[in-house]
Image 1 (tube, rainbow, N blue to C red):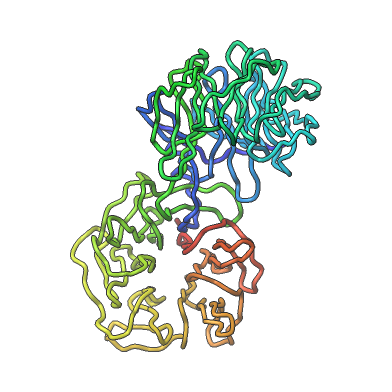
Image 2 (image 1 turned 90 degrees about the vertical axis):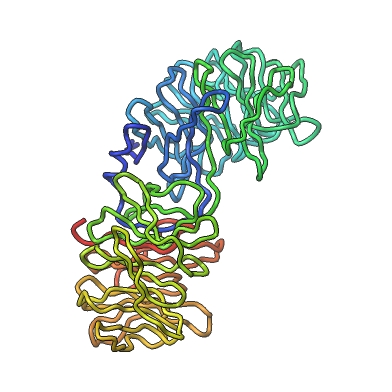
Length: 522
């Protein structure tokens, strides 16, 4: 089993992450999650893994130096291992909801295939073993917990179960319970577990099944503090997600309304690590030309769309919807700092892609149905056109001085002297290859009310490459492939894909739109 290193980051390690930003930038509306560490009162919060992997279910190692967690690689759930000292993340293979053995040498987790059994493995990903618990009602919410003495593993399936960690032999100690989390008290005598829905959501019971009692109606996925006096739970509220901390008598100590969930205590009990689900709209990500981990480029609660790489590959121009305004914003990929270039544009969807001049000194964009440009270092925007047609999608032509765009009649070329020439009648969007010899464009398929992707080289007949494409295609640096997003109905979502020029396509990322490939030599 390989242990490939993924893009991971903590404070001081950001340079390693930004230096390896993949070449295809895109907007994603996916609700992804990061791991966040904070003090037990909710203060001093810091993001540990801002990589856009959809990280969740953190579990602190007994020595406090590592965190095991779940992440999604675009196809399957995997187990990641974050080294807090270096910020590196190691991929340990398929799995979900990990928990550490007391000696820190092994992990127990939910298998990713079928979600109906538990597995164990060494902390380096080797020696994987199924426990054979298929008949116990394990489901994808099952979050197992290793007993403090290392001999048993508790989990909730069809009731509360305890399994021998070596043999896998299991016994059901309570009929109550719904797939969720179980957690041991530090002395190993009591288990807190998800027992709802019912009168209580979280219950307590002795490890032999006696002294059963309810703890709270609020929260789920309990986790016992190292000293045994507190139990942290997830607050499952769409509007106010967070962490609730209770005493063992059920008294609420504090509510951490910081958008975090699934908490796990540090070994000294002074900090919590949790997953934080990000909401608020699309953000910008980067990915490679084959499936793999992604790097998130923009943070915060803004809607970021329509990204366009600068010619030097060091900056990205994009649309940012903030406080009811649609802006043109520039992101520095080294510092991750964003600056507003145009404070207000009129673009109802705030999704029309800007573009750069070949020398990187100008950014072209559409606003109020006309074409504009603005110096990339900042300055006064200047209008290029005044038309009754709604002009958008500016594209700098291969000659470096003319400008392509689309309106309701198709794609056009605007020359420096103001003369307009039609490029592709009826085109919805388009892009030129870097060598200027080919053009890729979208045409409506009237029968299906969807746009199809075509490629035309010189004066040759166009070739249809793909169906139901959403956004302008973006050429690879060698002009042999195209990145684009298309709509699938299984289930309905936008998929980022890459295709060659005859239609052999590969899906890269789900829930992704408006890709742009970094330009040659960057």
